[in-house]
Length: 270
Image (cartoon, rainbow, N blue to C red):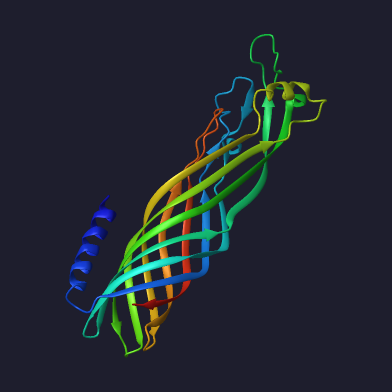
């Protein structure tokens, strides 16, 4: 809420000021590479309280997963701004999306021992024949569906056609995440272990969240005499945490999304 309030005050100030100093309206299209990194938090299978399986503390929890990928973002922008001598100011409202997903697969083994669930020993007695190395497969996928940004900017005219600027604003967007945990049961000759795993199946957890975060942008612009302009900018986005709902005793950590991008804009001032 603080980010939204601060940005709203800045936006109102800029809009009011533009009424007194050559207001401009601009429309542009933008696109460029987005350098994305995700970090999946540690999560567990929910077996630490099982009465028929023994799992070591280290094997119980999956270590954080990190994945990097270059995606492509595109969208449109509506701008309102003005100029006071060599100083420029403005407010940009963007609508965009990021193409491509962040899918990462990993695999490791967990050593399990089937033990007696009661005095009859129906799940095993903890001997070597009741132990198995269980291959665990994990897949994490994150998508950016759409986003809206509000970016107040201030800049300086180096010349009549060259401008540099900086801005601090907010981003509000829709993000989807999917985490899948699966495993392969032991061979048929290990019947006690297979019995212990009967009620523990593969799980897929999905989450769809809208999140707000801060953005910082620095850029260089060129403008022609007829109002056509182009910009090259660098944007840094504060991390976003997305959580999936858990089930069947599986505890999922949040997925953090880190993003920075290079964008090229082309538009016209009216």
